[in-house]
Image 1 (cartoon, protein in one colour):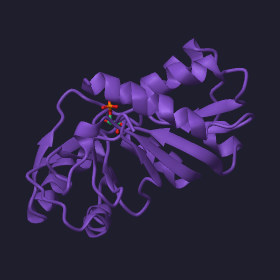
Image 2 (tube, rainbow, N blue to C red):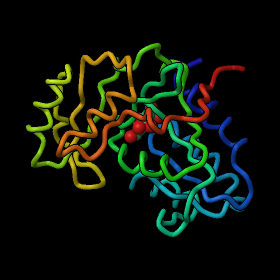
Image 3 (cartoon, rainbow, N blue to C red):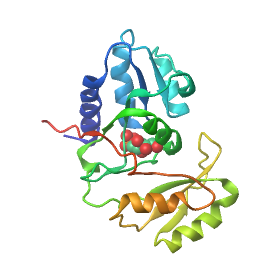
Length: 212
Ligand code: 5RP
């Protein structure tokens, strides 16, 4: 089975959580693109979606799904999103697609977070994938110095501006043995908008797209 097959299977499996009349929170990325394809097949069945990125908004609209503002919906019943890494406690690294801030907001505003990944993204300890941190542009160097003090090697994702007009630092060489503690520590750095560590609000369910 290729990674792409795993992504497609996980995305299709998430459809079992979709109920008629729902407004669904939708993440970002290539796995979510498969989920949006599947949602499109049931577009008459769901009410609308809340999107985590301009990219997903475009895909949703192309498939005839209405996109609504999170401020107009109240709490969502379901959020479906991918991840870059997932540990056995369902803590995640996210933000490879630079959509981490809106993703974290929708995850926080949802009762159930279903994460869809290919099996290769399961790890025992998070950190092999560089941890994305969204920063206010003028704070980039300051935040980078603080991340070094926390033991990481931040690299500016040059040329990338997020949907919120900010920049991304990818932090290499972290071995994240206590995800909630590191999430909290990075959140404290002035100039950080969001860290792509999803531990305080982690996934409720992880679908890995394996045969069973
Ligand atoms: C975007 C994300 C994605 O969920 C993550 O990068 C996984 O992407 P893909 O499904 O393409 O592997 O966090 O910010």
